[in-house]
Image 1: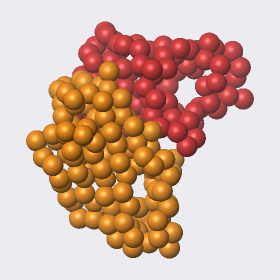
Image 2: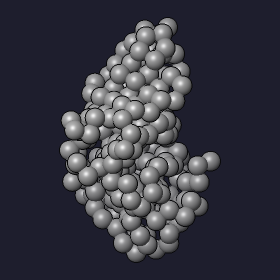
Image 3: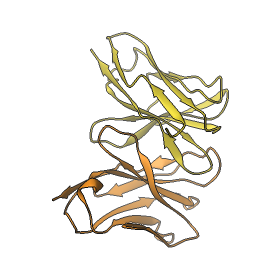
Length: 113
Length: 110
């Protein structure tokens, strides 16, 4: 089955700096890679995703890059703000109805004002 | 509110007692999942169901049971066999891609 590893487990950045979280996956058949943000005590919510036919996707201050050959993908947050403080999870799956979504271990991001 | 509802939000269990967590969705998704989250930890898969009347064990199924009698509902029972049940439990339903999560149930053993 799929195995997703996520690094770092914690990340502290100064407000305005960039944050980068990296994930690797094991199953070369995986073709869909979402990122979820979980604020304290709340449910995870999708913030951005990327499919395997795309190398990079950007949405305002967040971007995701995918390297299929190396089987890794990364989340980039630019111009970080205090409201970016949360736990971020990457995930991987083969895109078909009902397929299991495998999550990474999460990264706790703290943006210091 | 995302179309998936968990109840209750907080639950207290006595030693040796079984408790059932509710998860209902109106998104018409076939697949539903239960995850456990411990403080500072990731999401660990307990059970999942890809279709009505069928479910599979996840990575940490021991001490838990589920049923999937209706497409909309996927209740999780935490049995007395689960020795360390205090955690945050998240239910999710998944369409073709995106997973939608419920607001979670925080279970505490008293």
